[in-house]
Length: 431
Image (cartoon, rainbow, N blue to C red; front, side, top):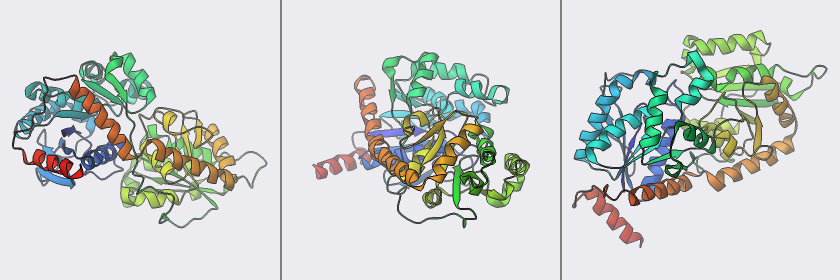
């Protein structure tokens, strides 16, 4: 197949750790590469946010990133992109007329709007992955939700009209049902992890330790990620227990702008203020943005990785930590309910609850053997269900089911398409 991925704000070329750069960027890049490894060709269509970017950038064998012109060629917050989505859809349709695809796979709701418009012109089915739902975001953030007011209603339309919706976890299936998505057009295919890069053995990175124990948080510096709850948990040493493990623990926080720019970030300053207020300022260090290639070594340096979001559509970092054999303490929300086997490969606690976090962290940090056992179980769970090869195979199966029930959307390859000849030759050689 030739697959057209649409990821309007989350380019696989973007540096991770910014406000709008995170798990979706990783997901699109890794899924595209894994599908290409199975013999498919993948074009990832994303909005041009820099006039110096080439139209097409090779990403990996069989994968290209194609920049579409929609709105000013400048970085824009994703919540400000909706006025440019119609133009993105027109540009996408034009690109697909030049280089046809068998199906469109839209990532995020605004990509879905663009894909729906393009599909109407070129006549191919649309697979939708939301990555996050506006109804959930509004529930947790209320008046602080900066999404366009139409987001929830548009997502409901997309959920009802897409040829298939791929949810990333079981919790999302329930949310999609409430939006009116037909059950027969919803499948679950999780996000994945690079099992060759994220391993228990390998280089150990991060700054030198200043405490016997180290807890690590990785993610964007936004309130909903719950980093403040982790900072407050660090200070909750039980009365009469000065030797408690938490009192001998340092917290590293990776994410946000570059370390030299953290002083300009309002939430980074807030976290430092909270740490000083609760008396753990000397044991909390903000690292700033960490390259994805440097992340495995940093994860291995931790005794425990904490993921304490208020809500989480999936959560790739906990899975990456598990693949490194590091125990995870996480919020019992979203995808973590699927990935973390509570009490076996990690510990789940209620969201927005520093007391529960402290109660989970203290015993785990104090027990070396338990951490080792939990870490082994975590790696095994990652291997069993979440390697990208397995995720790509499940995604391919979903694509084939969509194509099988939409015969009008026959493969749109030109008869002499070089890409198709290449893949036919490749499959013949493999056979």
